[in-house]
Amino acid sequence: MNFACVEYGKDEGVGNNLFNYSWARIHSENMGFKLKHSGISDLNILPTNEDKECSINLTKSQNFLQDFNLYKNHIEQIKSWDIWNPITDVNSKDLVIHLRAGNRFVARNAKYSPTANDFEKIFKDIDFDRLHIVTNMKKTTKWNLDDIKELKKKLKLKGGDGVTAEMYQRKDYPFLTDEEALDYTNSQIECFNNYDPIWINGNVYDDFNYLRSFKKILFPRSTLSWWAAITGVANEVYVYGPWAPHKKMTSGWLGNTDYKGWTSWGK
View 1 (spheres, rainbow, N blue to C red):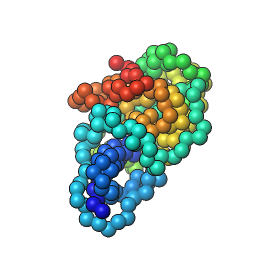
View 2 (cartoon, rainbow, N blue to C red):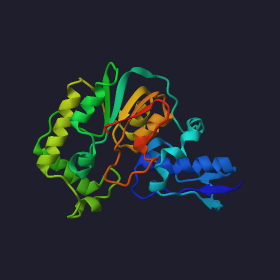
View 3 (tube, rainbow, N blue to C red):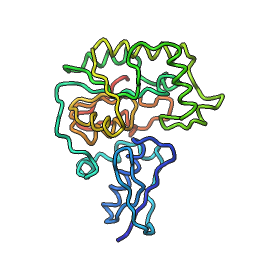
View 4 (cartoon, helix red, strand yellow):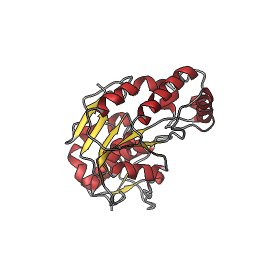
């Protein structure tokens, strides 16, 4: 048996690791190789333990991997893998969104992310009964300046969102001012709470599978959400078009994903 290998990037998030894993597994299977990898523990994807030399290394950069065209012809193959938790309770009437907080609320990422007005506009175009929000945000009522300062402190101590604590501690790290971050955060919370949402905040495994169980899913820039939409039951997907406007865009950029049932929003 020939082995292909993939190595996950240091401090990369779960969604990015899924790009590495999926690209490598697609090509190892199509070549008749067995994939050797270190697993993705947050999703209960177990590592391979064979002590074998690799015939080929299929590790690629995220700039290469995050091209939706690479997976367009392999969706059914991906969905057939036994690593995905079976979905038994499908929600077809409600809308679920994935809201990453963390540095998206207190750093310059907020300037490249959808505003409350952007969400209001797209909500009006979607027919849904109830709004569900999957988020890593702990407080879902109005924030104050102490909440913002506490979040920044936590990021500097422990890191998060695919960024190390050392990066957050740099003097040139692009944090928003406390006042800017507070305004942005509270505008989002006020917008969502107008819809009397169901807030979901669990571990990565449970949150990922919760997202996968909805027919209607909307998300800003989030690779984890992108994979939830690919591997779940969704047939109505709203992907944030600008995705990462501060980076070089390509025709295959994830915000342009044109799979059946997918719509770009926020452009």
